Length: 602
Image 1: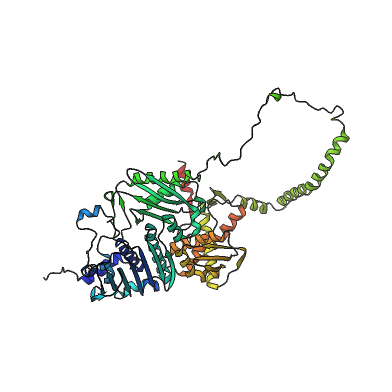
Image 2 (image 1 turned 180 degrees about the horizontal axis):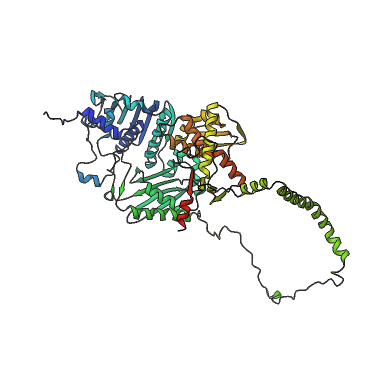
């Protein structure tokens, strides 16, 4: 039997590695920008064509490379960042694996122009699908220019499964933000199809955050700073009253490297406990400085998941730091004697040290049995009371007469009035033959609205309510891209927008059957719900928009409902095609059977 194990060719190995490192155009942007930062670039330009499918170009004024380094940079595991395994415990650079350029070159056509300051000419290297096509001298400025063309040209299946242009450019913007926030001392620019998205000058951290997210965020930033022997924490957190219902302004960095850390996110949310609006997400831009030997950044190919040596202690330090910052800026309720109005206390002087005896005036002519005087005082009131309430007493007897005439109908009304009751302003409970039915009021309303909005989108009909005072706001660039992508569907639901400037919108109209009085908040919830459903390939654009709109306009937890409102919601829910599940697939109804209830009392 012949041997069956073979070494893969480098081109195939690079394509396999690219599947882990290069998942979409945004992955290329991330790796190339990080290389430019590591090279010491102070001016980094990113140029995108067709959301990265046609061209991704990153230009820097960093140290550049020699001819030998330029050629070796495209080989797998070729790196200048580490020389031994021990170096993995003291990493201070963005990249270190030596996989990025090899993976990119394996699935695209790459052109590199680079020159060091001490060289008169640069070097041009062209690699197509891991094969070197050109290597020759060229004229170019100091630094490096990477041009990545026709991404996944040799893997049609990968290219086919890329998302829409708006989705891909949104991912690029997100990756761009993660790098530029960590390096405010570097000038960055981002252009897409000849349109400037960002032009960020070198500045401090606060100014960089303002440059990325808009001027309105400046007044929301609260400084956080803590130094301990285990970890140093600095940066900014957001004021709770301005917290949004969408993700996008939550950033953790460790040693200037962006990281995802759900466990630490819970620490921040815990610090905001009881002071955040319902379902709001706090903003934060938190930088941690830790001993490189105490963290492991080599647990994932994208290097965004990081393991800490003592996560539990850091969790406690982080939560305490956020709470201290909130308290220091008087976000947590406290008495501020400097700003409170002063209470005047009368001062006793020598001239009025002896208090005067109070006097009582008595009407010696008053006769409580004098009916004429009392009748004059009360006659007007009694007359008005009798006129207003006689009809009401008659209505009471009329109701009793109807009960006697039609006792079955009156009993039906009484049953309806005690049919539903609300628990914690969150669940609707009603008795059924098999036991007790509990309904999640928010999910139930989402299901009702979802099917209603889906019908509007299918029939191209909706009624818009024009706002007397239009609302103008500046959106996060990634959210603005999503809005542009689904603006047509939102128009069918009743929204009306104008675009007065870069990433700015004016909301002129909203759906007429919306329960929300704040169209901007409604739009934020809608965008967040839409982002959460984008990864589901079985859901079309209309279904995603309808689900997002339902989540944005449904009644929230904490809202008390009247008997009539609970009855209406119950009836409309069971008139839906799928009353048992919300648009996100979560259960709406749960029944506690009599057997289950009986077991509780045994």
